[in-house]
View 1 (cartoon, rainbow, N blue to C red):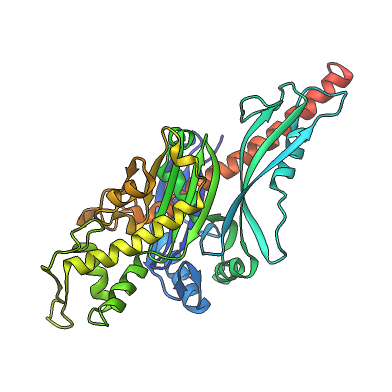
View 2: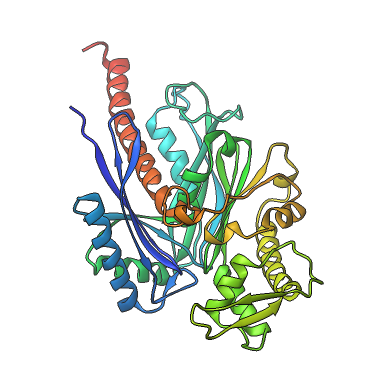
Length: 407
């Protein structure tokens, strides 16, 4: 009798290190059975700069996750990010031999291998390959070409790659915990499995995941990934801007509070009323005109969104039905929706800020989209592997029947 499967996703982010444990039942339904989350240390802009500190954070998160899930975790799906990560789409084409007209797994694999085989410099490593639909003799794409007739099969593949040594920093850190890394996943690809429905990916969707250190993005059209990348700026960058542009009058802690509670991306830039931060014991008070605070936030967010817009296909935003979606802790900034609508010229969907009681809830808080998405990614990845194996066995049998007759 089929049994449930347990998957674990690990996110080593700039502000938090999080392990989510999920249970996938035989009917394909999934639930989160454990979470371990601690503040990050030794991480900057999503990349590890102090392995010892980052490794201890993973261990702490692992202990919490195993305790809450009442399960031993030995392997994880690991999300990665960083400004060295790029995505590019390549097309692979295969023409069937003259004496064959029925497409089988070998033909599909040949087209897929050509699509995934991109010319990279020796220092780069491809770690995600998102395959698109197959086109047979130029017809409309299909997800399942095996068994159909045709002469030529084409497929697009979006390959995500990064600098090998920088990816290895994350791998070494996790393996020394020790944990086995089942697969590396670009962070917004994982988040998309939580934020976007299949219908939204089909219609066209740009997902921007704005965290503390980076703003990662991934773009879908017709269900296929067509663009992805990372902007090395996020919520912490805005905090640093506030500290710097106020001449150090505001601390990092105060900047975070002022940004979240008083700032507004589309707020009045001429507002001279004072936004004030005060500690419980009255020390390190900070004050800044709201107009100045709004200007600092708007300029940085505008820079991030313009950078993303310049990285996606020009024609996409002109397509009917394409929308922009946000995820990540910084995505709940007030006024972000209005700024994004002006920059992208289409409908924008911004997460609802979690209430105080929901702040630590992994389901209600957009901070946890990537970590939870890793569970869905793991489920799909292994389902696809099983489907390919079954397809291979089926077509081996079918070929034998066609060649030798019924056994």
